[in-house]
Length: 192
Image (tube, rainbow, N blue to C red; front, side):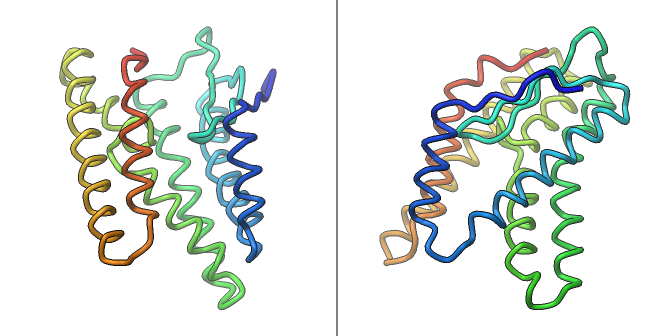
């Protein structure tokens, strides 16, 4: 059983800003998509014999702290990491079967699932890449590989987003690239 759920001030601030800007009623569907995504991780951890000590809701998403007294194997941890995007994609598929009423939740869930599969730290894809590389390389070299991939993709997304913005397009891609690059500051905290 989870011993605690904590919300950081950044999460609360982001939630308040998004609620203020949400004139179309998208936020409840986005929260549903995020909850299903995190539930996918949680269910996988539990099915694989692990225990979640704490769930932290941060400005960059949900983080689960596992009880290290009941560790998962590398394969189990990889399955748990990929279960979140898997749950997102399953929700998208189910919502699409509803027809037009399901398009918004399907689109949000699909975007969340695919975005999290990018091989960029701290997204699920970056965590999965680190686990896979750590199976073949020393941890420091695996970490360096994930860092390089994360910086390259983050920079590419930022550059592409700035280009789109300069042509009169939206700022979403530039913001995502910038956010992913900012996340690289904490990459030294990658766990073994």
